Image (cartoon, rainbow, N blue to C red; front, side, top):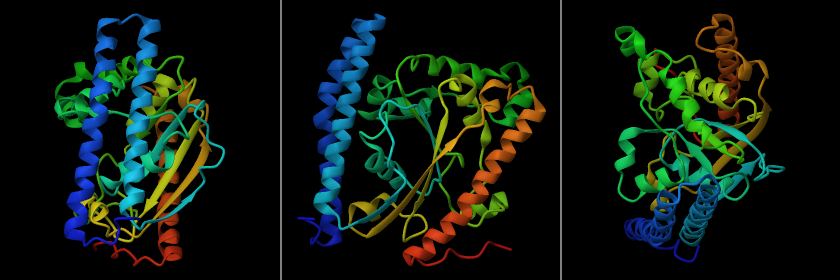
Length: 309
């Protein structure tokens, strides 16, 4: 909190520069390791480079967290992270409010569980510095097909699952954490109204992505870490975080057993299994919606606006 006394107009740019400087600092050794990974693609060497690259990413996260501690006066109310292990295989699901969510997840999980991986749009591979880092860390880049597109191009049906399986093959034999935002996009009241969401604090969940990961890695993924993040503001911006306007963040983590049937069945072609899986996700989401309301009340945060008529 050494620099937390600074005014927001000065603190925000300073923290931003700290984050950028930290990223540039660790990008150099990471890209050197990535080069070795390309030049020596043999399985044993590849795993060694991946471990080294992951260690660099965890150190980058540690320095980001240190920067937050130095510049912010955030009270972290974190529940449920006891007993987690870096030797475990985890599927993480989280409500999605803001870009701040990624910073929060890195803050609470860094060095507690395997470094989280999440599926990215292919276009993000070209993001300066980070795109190459995500590739080196084996983040899967996906081309997802919408339902309307599949109706016009039925030959593409099943390609999402095939791509997911191929992406997950590189994780074989090494404990991994896969992060999935079930809502598929950040929450906003406009999106909430457009979807006619039955939940007060959440958009409708999209079960397909979760089902595809389980189909590809279900023999290893036994636990779901259901993460719920609550902020004083309904959807804080990254600037709110950088400029010291977030004073409290509540994070609730619950470890759930994943029903075995979901990792053995055929989500695409078994309508009975698909309905059971979607019902399981809807129940999970209904509990999360109630939990968010309770956590907001306990923390003294203002209630969210009522649902649009």
